Image (tube, rainbow, N blue to C red):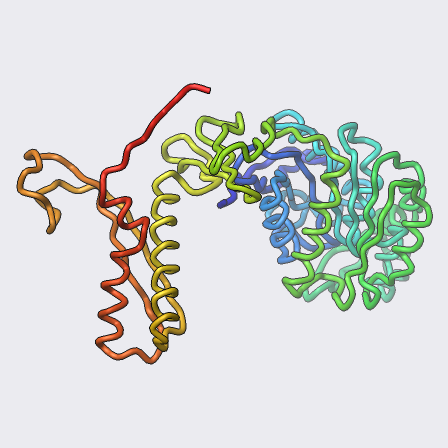
Amino acid sequence: MPPRFERITFPGSQDASLSARLDLPAGPPRAFALFAHCFTCSKDVKAASRIAARLTDLGYGLLRFDFTGLGASDGEFANTNFSSNVDDLVAAARWLREHHAGPQLLVGHSLGGAAVLVAASQIPEVAAVATIGAPSDAGHVAHLFDGALDEIAEHGEACVELQGRRFTIRRQLVDDLRDDRVTAAAAEFNGALLVLHSPVDNTVGVEHAAAIYGAAKHPKSFVSLDAADHLLTDAADSEYAASMIGVWAQRYLADQSGAAAAPSASAQVVVAETTQGAFLNHVVTGRHRFLADEPVSIGGFDAGPGPYDLLGAALGACTSMTLRMYADRKRLPLDRVTVEVSHDKVHVSDAADAEAASPSGARIDRFTRVLVVEGELDDDQRASLLRIADKCPVHRTLEQSSRIVTELA
């Protein structure tokens, strides 16, 4: 199910144009979320990208953007502070509301986690907030430029190196960070809160997670990120965090996708429209559930395999299973089978095995099947596997005419 994305801009709190990316799932989003990155980072930091990818896999639409003066956004970072970051989040939520739907979920990493807690009260749609490695007081960030505090106090600003880049830090940022609002915001928040934190986070200690969690009302949850570092540089850590957020949030968010529930298994195979888009369908086979769709190029969401993809999958699966049964029975040294299937329509005259009686100019369906057989097989054994492939039941069904009986329920 390939996700989609849009690159957008919107006016931030200081009238600067903010650069944003809206990641969308293959089908209509179940809910929209807003992501706030860490201090001096950008929307494209690896952790943010991986979290966005996982949440879209789970059906969420996620807006992430660069705060004023960072990444690809306009404006001067030196003129910003914690309050302007909160205001940027409110502006981002306003854009989502006007163009799609207001965010029900806020996700914030590090200082972004503190910012989403404070911003939540100003975004009426918010039902859930998730923080990752967030400080319980915004002033904790000031330790990053402790050595420059005297210069900032005397001259009003100082140039500070953070994560290998130089930033101008002004007194108004330092003063604003000292305004303790984070735990108060957690205490006042009436939605669901998920606090994710690593017990070995050397940038923001786990005691900050305890303070946020302790201040908040229920429903609240805590997830330990075990050995993760502060920036979640290990892909497994950021993907785990996103998976936990996505599954947890489903309990508290209203599903805005408009999807009809999957039908019950009232027959061997049941296919029913999801009521989303022109072609998206639920497919139910026994206890198995998945989606079928058409490509975007013909009006679908590409949220699942198309009908001919499913037909090709049936041929490929049946071929692989048939070869395995034969090899095991004959005790052939077959280690693994891979079947590649493609489908197209060709003129009868182009088909090598076309019957002479076929009408001139007619087109037929052609499935091309490539077998990859691994193991210490000799030429005779490989040839026997090639012959057996033509005996798979789905192969025979496709080659023979079938009768389809259609009735109205």
